[in-house]
Image: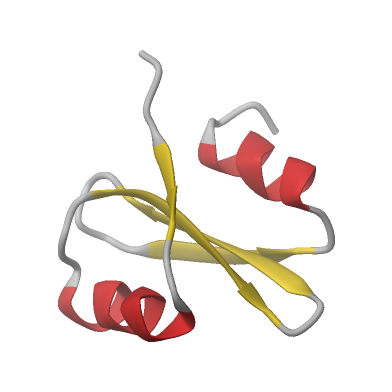
Length: 63
């Protein structure tokens, strides 16, 4: 399954983390970090990465 990874603002990222909505895969940039948010199941799993490539690999479950 090829899921689309959407870029969101830091404000929207915080909203997704707090409300667990909408469902999906998201990323944002926080200072030097690329932040991935896997909210595909409504659990808003969140990880920080040094590169966009690492972030996208985690979101695509290719780690």
